[in-house]
Amino acid sequence: MNRKKKHWYQYLWIWSILYFALGFFNILFAWLGMIDFILPLIFAIVGGNKWFCNNMCGRGQLFWVLGRDLKCSRRKPAPKWLSSKWFRYGFLAFFLTMFGNMVFQTYLVFSGAESLKKAIKLFWTFKVPWHWAYNGSIFPDWVAKFGFGFYSLMLTSTLIGLIVMVLYRERTWCTFCPMGTMTQGICQLKNKEK
Ligand code: SF4
Image 1: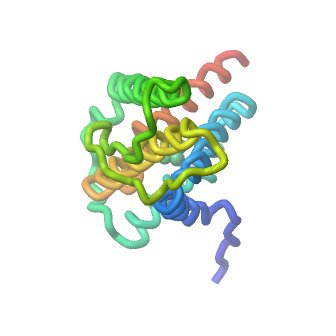
Image 2: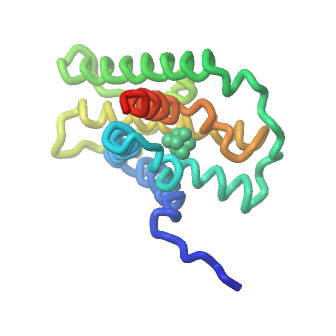
């Protein structure tokens, strides 16, 4: 049987699981998620391509492994509006607003206007105590505050992705993922320039 050799980056779905496990025990590890924010943008801006999405995204791979390999997905077509332009860009705008709000909340702790609360927020609404994940460090409190906020964002988006994975196709999340929308927009602009 001629099986194609797998590259190391095809196992990054393991990193996706590890990321949440590490953040469960120490919220400072949440910062590592910034790699998943910055790398796709670098690929899109420098290379004008979605190589990250197609090859390196641990989250996308995780949906595939759970949905396709472990058969956790119904593999039904998603409603069309989920991949419509207005929804994708609307969700991107919402996501960026929430990201901005998280940075502002970090600033409040940085400036001393607010104290650090050891909790995460799921679906931008439900506060969940997470006090075991931080017992002080050599870093100032705002560093941990960003960690709690970023972990909330990463966990919320993964949960949404898992829900749509179960209900529809394996990688339905990718049709409206804010990173995917952003990198696609950048690639379109870049390719227009040529
Ligand atoms: S669209 Fe989002 S989740 Fe899907 S592969 Fe790209 S970055 Fe990953």
